[in-house]
Amino acid sequence: MALFALLSVSLAFGADPAGFTTGKAELKSAGALAFGPDGILFVGDSMGGAVVAIDTGDTHVVAASSEIELAGIDRKVAALLGLDSDQILINDVKVNPISKNVYLSVSRGRGLDAAPVILRTDPSGKMTELSLDNIPHSIAGLPNPPTSNPKAERFNPRLQTITQLAYVDGKVIVAGLSNEEFSSNLRVIPFPFRSVDNGASVEIFHGSHGEYETQAPVRTFVPWTIGKERYIVAAYTCTPLVLIPVKALKSGAKVTGTTIAEFGMGNRPLDMIAYRKDDHDFMLIANSYRGVLKFSAENLDRYRPIVEQEQIAGVPYKRIPGLRGVRRLTALDATKALILADSEHAYGENDSLDLRSFPLP
Image (cartoon, rainbow, N blue to C red; front, side, top):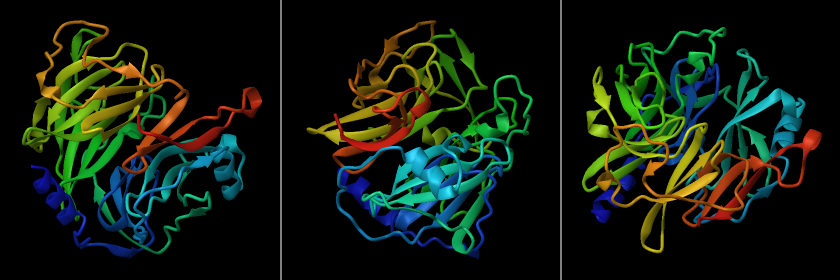
């Protein structure tokens, strides 16, 4: 099984990115990021209703990264762009698994007309902008994105078109919202891009709320194999953890996920990673309120499905001490993770964000 998985990954990362066009990559926004084969960066463009694949050319192999400690990363980004730090947003952070360079998706400005920027930082801290003016790229337009509504009561649904991306098994998995009646949507898009279907509508039982929901998007997820079947381990706001079989994600399908944990109300999951340590598999999930949680990723299909109102139930977890104010979490290499977090050394008007690595617990 392990050899088959290794061969699958090796073949996928040798894919020929056919269909790329060299020219200006037109982004209307830059949110969720994911890396695929040969330094290909996938960018979630919610405002444009598309996933854009960019050939970064960043393919110099580095086996392991040195420790990263970049204090005031938001101020460095703002200075590079000629702005004050309160005029930029860092939307996502991902590490190129080949080069170990760090990529950031940034909004230059904070309104709906904010300009998207992709920045690259090497382990020494040198930061440069990835020029999109003349670069090989390919676009997968999503056929049914939600309509933009800046006056919506809670949030503009168009900004939730793409909440998370992942590349696995030669496909890009896209979580977010659509304009369908069941608006929570998961799509599986073969790469290289050739066609995009409507994706599947997803419903889940929300333990804290005690009801089935179809409008809340997956906030973050990890592709995961249980036995011989590929699943999405998905986290939702307030905070169900759900198993969704990838094979069920057909165009037009209505899929019901299996809720296996409820981590509590008043909390928003931000990022998840999976890793292996001491011959066991684990996952970390960074949250807006409950901090960074660690749980075993083994035998997730053996937990009792949650189908009644419960506040804290299912998969057991432990909170990782010392990791506070985490905004983004991503894998750095086999032994370290990377976080974008509130600075540990600044308060009040001097609040800032740091980018720093830590050993996987």
